[in-house]
Image 1 (cartoon, rainbow, N blue to C red):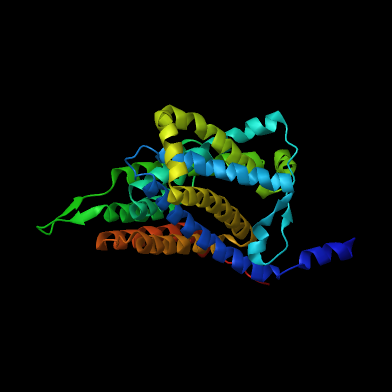
Image 2 (image 1 turned 90 degrees about the horizontal axis):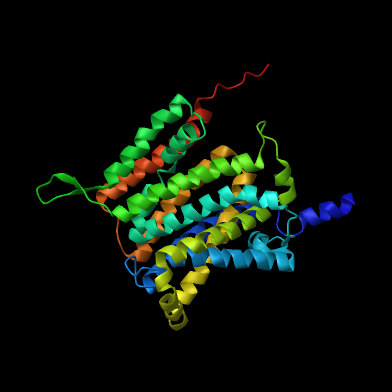
Length: 350
């Protein structure tokens, strides 16, 4: 039995090579998601066409279909991207109580995703800058809602992040003076996305770990992070449907007609949903396999790469203020992520 397990583990590329490839495809998937998402919104008529919530919901619908197909086949192909054999993924044996317990995570996932789509639809570049400020909302939510505090050194990093986002919102006028000028949709929904992402993180931690940091019983019943993510995305889709019909229900049939007649909308909508699922799964896999420092640096680098890529795709260059503000905010996020580890006293060797 041990021989078979070792053989199975060594099938395909070594784990070190696979991890590098997972990083590459995580970044590529995130970049392509942003491109496909922008393409879908543009193909549907832009942010004022009245289809943004519909597109967000249908993206989650693609995620739900993909998850169900994996359960039907019993195979999760994502490891192929790391030149390894596909992993088995069987339908988890969850109770009704388990599903109900997962609803808060699914709800926050749906809200964070939809808010992100609205933010990036308003201004793909400024939306990314606002989303870089997620630690600020995470700290506020953690303290205000869950009573969790952060260290003083982390707290001192928050004004740097806020200052960077604020500076990116400025624009120099003809008289040389600065005034606030930014896309309000990107700012408002970007902050909402950050808030719901922070709540999702807290609720996910409560669901999967007990007070001692050990895996809960429901974690074991999920039988893997892949299954938990799949269930979460299906719940997110179910949560988004009534919101979509309540806010854009009158536009649903026109959207269906437009979808059937517009190849660009078909391609970008399906691919944005698929790339969203895959890049999030790869992010989970890579972060789980690396230390906190590596994960923080990787996340920071990803934000920079995505911003540069979207500037090239949209043909919209960042202003000097946005470049400086984004740089300050992202450096603040990196410092926030690393500072406690950097200042941690080193253990003395005997």
